Length: 85
Length: 362
Image 1: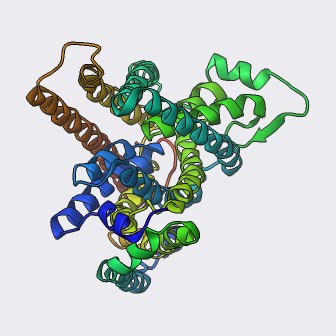
Image 2: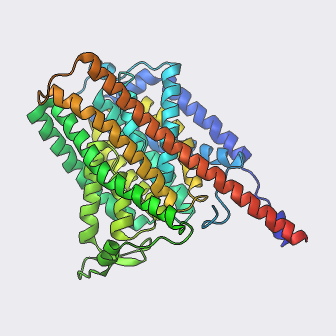
Image 3: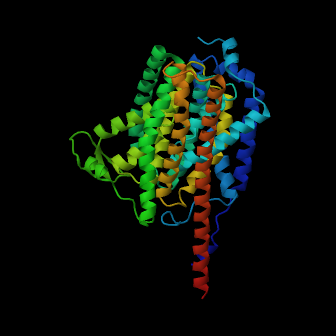
């Protein structure tokens, strides 16, 4: 029992930092190159896949970052799922 | 179809203030969506329009932030065992058909009655649906709270028991959230209605979640989590449709997504700390407050259509601003209830852990 209590899960600080940097880079690229990107996305037609692929890429990187962020902050799901509150 | 000159006119200039504003609204919207499975969209579209974004671009960009947000939320909640993927896909596909039909009806109304007629239809749909469904959800949550049975498992409604008992050979599908077989002849119209509502008022979950709970018999937590799968399917299809016409402002969509991914993770975590009836409390509260916001706009559109005495420009503007303010209040109040419930749940958990430790020491 005591041994079980001692197995503290390691916080994903490294992964959070890596994903955070990639996320910032993606957003910087989007905002600094907005004229070019909007030029293509705004044409529609065959470029319709661009916003979809962008959304998936951002959600993967930024989604992993935000998930790790709350874990590192100590905000995680309840241990017991029912009847906690 | 859309040349670059027109595209440039569609896309606004973004400054730091606008970016922060969209990030914040995205965060609050994401928090509520992570918790109740939907919501946020009804504020995000007008929030973008308040920055000067054309209506269609605002709808398209909102849609394009919605599907990746819903995906991340669904994955998070699936880890907690709250998602019924099969039910989400079955409802999501029929919801997609509902979205297309709903958009077709909208276009027809706009052609016949103009912009004001279309707005009046949307507001009337808001008021009627939110009054009936929102009132029912809130009343149910209140009854559960007063009964003192909030900790017990949710009871399946009589309607859901009947739906589960109907056996139509060749159409029965087993869903784990319901732990029973249901005919797809029930799920298809419910999904279709969800999609139609999404095309009309942007928040299909206001029909989708209550129908999963009260008509099919799914627990609140699973219904709200499964709604995220439906939102993903509807959002992906809708985004592609708008993207084909070059209407998605990817900068707006991704900035809102930046905030909403922080929010949706937090909202999803929040569901593990609260009693199931809290889903109904948050959803019902938001629905009833938003109802007043939209009801306030009905006279404005009626005046524009000449159905009542013309309102002065000042009065119409005031009502519009108050209506938008009430919508923001609904979302912020929803977020506050989520955070408060989560805080209380976390405190209770820490207390019980501490007590268990003390007990162990003795």
